[in-house]
Length: 291
Length: 296
Image (cartoon, rainbow over all chains, first blue to last red; front, side, top):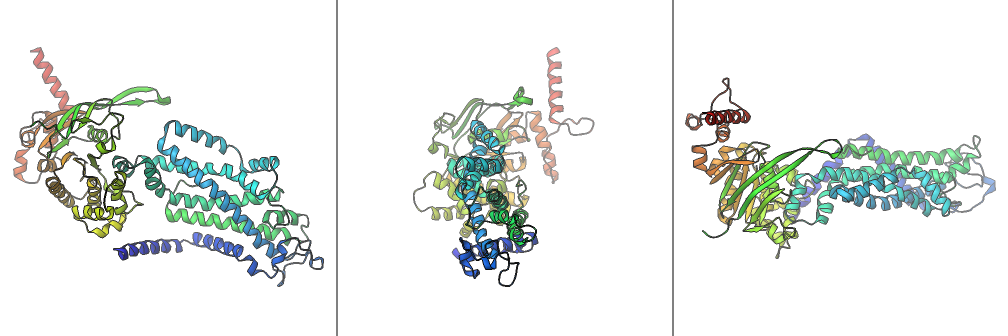
């Protein structure tokens, strides 16, 4: 009995992998994301200059162009830019994980409640969502950074405070469709609790949409985080952050182009990877309503 | 017999308001318009009617998915419409839905689906063993518990739905067109299974269908529903052998037949311009005849 079940699970996983591997967009996206994550995790072991993360100064090597010793060149105080870029990936990825880790559960639960119960529950939740949707995340982050102090935690807080709205909307529309499905009504007539219906019957049918949305979102969150840092409202130096590096390098353009262009490309590639992966997953799962 | 019927409907009504722009009520649809019936224990009551006649609305009201706008529903003599219709009372009636593809959650295994009612009603004892026993009851191998609905055929899915409905040992099973989504060859086997289970477990059935040949074989009593009213009711042989109402005749005449013997059993209906009339035509003719009688 157990082996039969395992075989079924195995063949399903195999089929999914087969379909996934035939989708070039998804594979490219997945490769980019996996490489970036590995670089971020293994950063201290990859680079020969792990101490360049901090406030190291090496004036003899300042403004060096890309070379075999310094792949991405060095910055205005002689630090290896490649080292700082892969450590910067860490910050971007942590930002995405924390923001989405806070925003998605809130958004999904509110969406389920609004979609399933309808009536005044729906009215209250969805109108609050509409209000929150009207505030651009960057403006909100600027406001929070201005009121509190500019830091990584505060900018994550600001983005997470608004990000749940998209998930609420998405899950709300899916739940509305599922609520009238026969299997939901069947569960009701079988005496299942509301918690069971929401989390065991409806939620599993939202998972693929959530996965697609999460992947697409990760790219946007990283872009917004980089934009905040660029404006000086995110991560504070000397912690290496891609946005901050672009901003600092900008004052040495165009002569020392690598100082801002290469960290900028890293942001671009990371965001692109998540978007390609999301698009690929969307095709794989065949979900339509996700932006 | 003094025992109260398993199911009794008393003058049941359901009116849906028709809303226009801005939610203004423009009119109403009388989906169910004063239906009364009672089913004694162990009987199969067939509710026949075309789509839109209110069959499914009646089923939904019995299951508590829709609230009636009037009348009462009694299970074993107790109304289920009170606010505190208890879980214990609700489990006496279960339903098999029309489309087994839609009534099973695609993301949950067969075993997980069958466990839902066991968990909800706090089934004592080993639930996994109970799932296996239920699968056996509907003649499916027990390892099907690990499968997902998309790995099953339509007939197998409907068997799973029946097993799930039987999990908490209901007294009454509402069958809402349980075979209409299935292949003809599979239909008969599902009906056979239901007959066997009915005898074995002492079940009472409310069998809702538009398929009159199935009903003739399966039900003992039939009610013919037209526009939310039961226009004719009685034993199967009586209603199908000598239909009194034009609408029943029309329904019977619409059943496709193969043998000459069956053809002979078809009731005669007046043709309009050489074609089979619609229900509306027939009722209009009837009204005309009545008003002529009254004038005469």
